[in-house]
Image 1 (cartoon, helix red, strand yellow):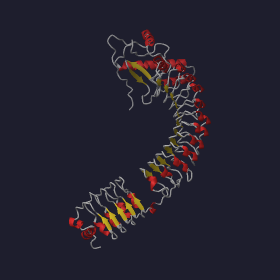
Image 2 (cartoon, one colour; image 1 turned 45 degrees about the horizontal axis):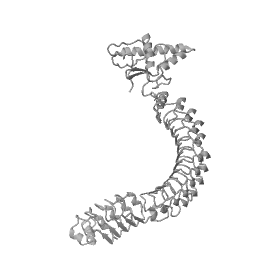
Image 3 (cartoon, helix red, strand yellow; image 1 turned 135 degrees about the vertical axis):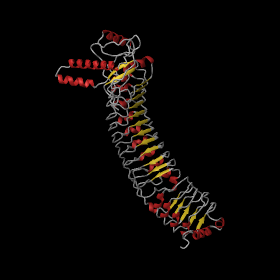
Image 4 (cartoon, one colour; image 1 turned 45 degrees about the vertical axis):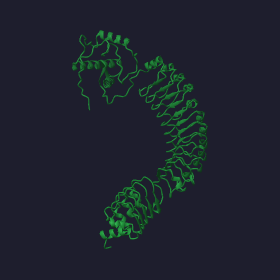
Length: 556
């Protein structure tokens, strides 16, 4: 919605007050008094993105201390604002030497800028729409430093303040232990940052930093350095001198190389260099004996150095979304590993070493979107702690070798988009689970001969069961089936049917009589109230005869 150009009325001045004209000597006198008494020292930086109101003589401004409030007369405010803008234009034109056309253009540009007039505790704005107004810092950094020094605060948060540079007075904050400067517009830090020798946490994320000063090396007790979401093309050399670091975040920069001096950071426990353009890791990464979490995902890595196996405390190693072609045998030394991200790489047959079976604490095995056709014999069965296996989007033609033992503790198994011949499946045993439904896709298993659904929580069977033309054995007892689908009559090869102990099964479909090869049918402990009790008491054979005689298929 566009703002109305008509100025809104503001509150009347209190009784006894008067409106002081802009060119009155009294206005200038009161302005001087206000600046002397103001608790905030004057600063060349603006607070709201507005132009600084600095005139050579008597600027118009309404002040809350010693200055009267504006009149309710809307025309008065409009005329004052217009007079002020004319004054600014005239001063601008006079101060610029050159053609009058250029001066007029500058005056027009100035006319589009924001002018703020304070009325009591409120601000009246003209010019730029608030929708287009840039975010700016409502913060005097120099004063914030002064307050921090006076109060002895060890934690200073200047985040999201639109700061583009840090004053050199930062050197006085030697007592600081935590400094948060994230979400600003910093391109670097002043050399004086090196005076903060007690600093333990420095957060610089979400800026436009391209370099760090060498003086940062003086921060010899720094534990956490956060440089995420900046514009670094390399890890600054000074970072490798911060041997006290335990956490280093360099995510989402433009880093291409990691220097071998990374090995100097022997106290690192948490390293994140994800979402960069890194093509290789230095062998000295093996010197990071304390490393617990290492996130190198979303880079361009093709190989891992064998020395990664020396980081024996690693619990989480994230390598997904790289170009990995293989894993070193030494990865089997990471016996504390719980999380290993390998999805979306270029791993192929033989590229996953058998030694990975030593990482028995792994909770998930996910190699989605690689080029893998087989896994080392018994690998999954050795990883007893696995609860999720994802092998989708690979080249598997069959389930990994290792037998049922490899799936004992698995709650999720995903093998979609492989080359497995699903039609070759002959037996599907899903007994004693908590299944509430069976997907219609079961009908695609055209070669299935045995389907075991015993002891679940099924309320119905899918109609697609009719497509299982080779099915000979169907066990669906001990469920909560309310009916059997009519399509069951299409199972001409069916020999054994178990639907016993379904407490909600009150009837059977007439189509059941079409299963001409049916030899065994178990219907014990089913109410079957829609069939005469004496028929049910006569046994399954009599029930089948009843369905044939009473149904539409009696002539068949």
